[in-house]
Image (tube, rainbow, N blue to C red; front, top):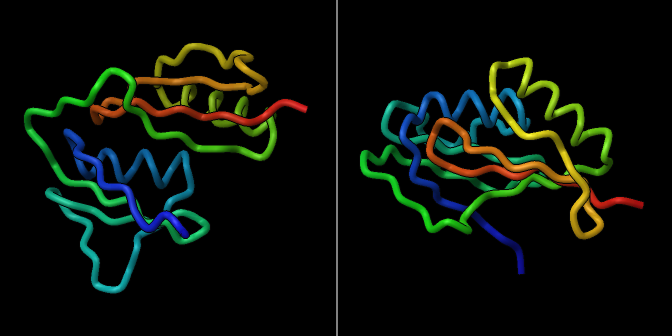
Length: 119
């Protein structure tokens, strides 16, 4: 079985599209799927779909987040550096349960994790 898509409510769709394209390599889904102020559809490098819809009163449970797995700890550090150079205030990556990871509260209303397994 293959994960087909994840649907997120976000506070600002264009800002979310920019974040996911610029820092995480997602691309427009194509096939007539829109990218506008109200909704957007992006794909990752294995074809999974991320759909996003603008929500005014956004609330996720405390444990909710989306995660991006990297191949190496160096890639985690590189994404962290790119995000901080882009103006995001993010805690430094740290080791946790055999992973190098960091979480941050993206300004679109979603918590994002970036991680890589160690060794």
